[in-house]
Amino acid sequence: MGIWMERLHTICYNEAKRTFPVLSSLKRKVLYALVMLDILFAISILALSGGSLRALTGWLFLNLLAIIPAAAIKVGLWQRRRKKARFYGGPRKQTRSTPDYAQDRTHGTRYVTQNGEAVKSGGEKIIADYLHDSNIRYEYEKSAMAASNRRISRPDFYLSDYGVYVEYWGMVNTPHEHTRQEYIKSMDWKIAKYHENGIKFISIYPKDLGNLDSVFKKRLREKTGSGPKRNDA
Image 1 (cartoon, rainbow, N blue to C red):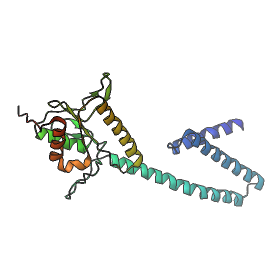
Image 2 (image 1 turned 90 degrees about the vertical axis):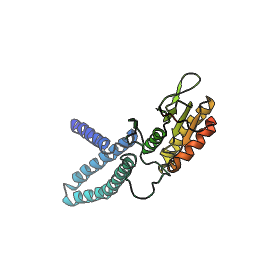
Image 3 (image 1 turned 180 degrees about the vertical axis):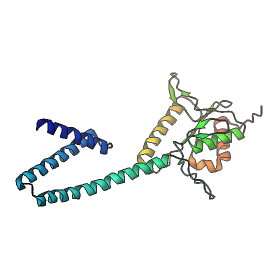
Image 4 (image 1 turned 90 degrees about the horizontal axis):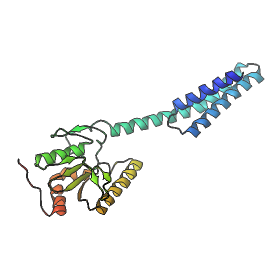
């Protein structure tokens, strides 16, 4: 009997862990305990009723009342994860209408620029191709270093002819609140570190992509006192 119960314990706990991977260890243990109690309850009913089919049917009915809502919750969580994966995956479908630059939904997708770099979003590709077409030399993800020679971050672009970094804040308007808050917190930290260490940088946001030429020239002029230099060589 002891060996049988130990095996039952292992099966129930592993099944709970496999079926509900998003739950914490404590919650899985609680779920396991409920399953074990339910099984013991069924055994007790069968023992007290002498194996009555009516008693077993009643137990199954009560379990269905619990399983159906649980299954609905699991399906809801699965659909939420799938929606989130679709949000961060795959390139955005192109339409004939004017692109929505208010938010960049392409983060997590690899794009190849005209220079042959693999960048991390559609917005980064637009900026890289703009710099390429404007004959502005740049390095992709060159480290920005603090005065202590420790790396702060790897901004998206470094304009070597100007000593200016370009940061594209592509997820600042993501509709996922927690992701947006964490992203903005990281963005604010980087900006503070850039100012603290005298690092010149330009911020570009998704809403700027529709008017990138004028926005970029204006912000570059603010940082350097002059517009873009053309490097035709």
